[in-house]
Length: 461
Image 1 (tube, helix red, strand yellow):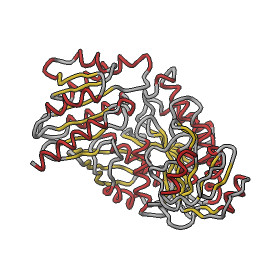
Image 2 (cartoon, one colour; image 1 turned 180 degrees about the vertical axis):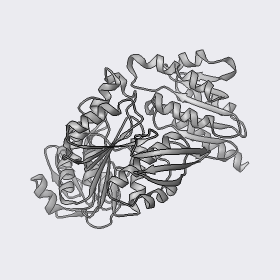
Image 3 (cartoon, helix red, strand yellow; image 1 turned 90 degrees about the vertical axis):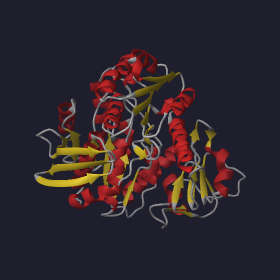
Image 4 (spheres, one colour; image 1 turned 45 degrees about the vertical axis):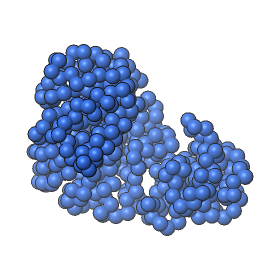
């Protein structure tokens, strides 16, 4: 459902912004670029994508209740249409117009890992304090950011925007669209290394997000990260004010203690000199640190931090980022994405997950370039440290890791996730705890789905 059922845009305003002329007057309550998720009352924006021009889906949009369509050429579909030269450019214009008409406090979140989780935390905890709008899923790229902006209701009080990249220069145009009042960089680690010479280059690319901020605006950085001082320097050069979160004594928002128990974390933090204890409904030190980043963002936005900490108890992990499914055996779904840092974090959670055999089902980590084989082989130490009982691997880069495993840990290897699936299903037993993680392109989600189906069968019979 839309965050607001009131009118988001009308044809008169959109015509003025785009310089076009709608064939019929209309009002919309939302914007969609995908007919699979389109809701009744949406404006359908026909973007060009991998499956061709969006105009091919106009009939679907009409059937699902779209009120109008933004198109690059006229169609015979009985739907009000606004013809423009470039639908993506027009979506950007709508996003900028939405930003300019709203007085929302805008928070931008980027980082190599943790940005979606931190963004989702901010959406949940700020929603209890005012009308909050933010990115859905991981809508953080050249179309996701303008779409999120264009969907923002005029009376929004807090806007939360995820900003991503995997190449230099990609954040720059996005930050100029958002013009954040507050920026959070969760951390900088070796992700998308295929497209960068070094981690420092990744940090400098993340720092592009500072370029559209006004002087004196706050930036929240990870005090524990190796690139903290570089990012601080780059922020200060832009006239920004630097704050920090983490376990470091210098952190303004400091994690004092963390205790994880299966699906929960118990946290004590110091928030700018004040002690605060709260519960987070997911395990892992990385989640605790993400929560500190979110609470820091709340504080910098002038909202109530204590109330926000209380609201964290209602949080649920984003899809594929740590959901626990308990039954005859337990499945931990980490299937959305992976890099060396997040993979080790997931294996650490598995290692502390309680009684039962601990089974890791892991697939290739993508975009590591020349470091791919080395970074996969380095996971052996983490697997041994966390006393993982059995390991299943898929993907060409995981072959070398699997070969280096002690025979007692070798569950099975296959080139693809679909070939690995039957090996995993055959082995899983009552009481096992199975964690599934890989880069999105490795496609291990079907393994999670098959395990959950097996869970249901065991429950039923």
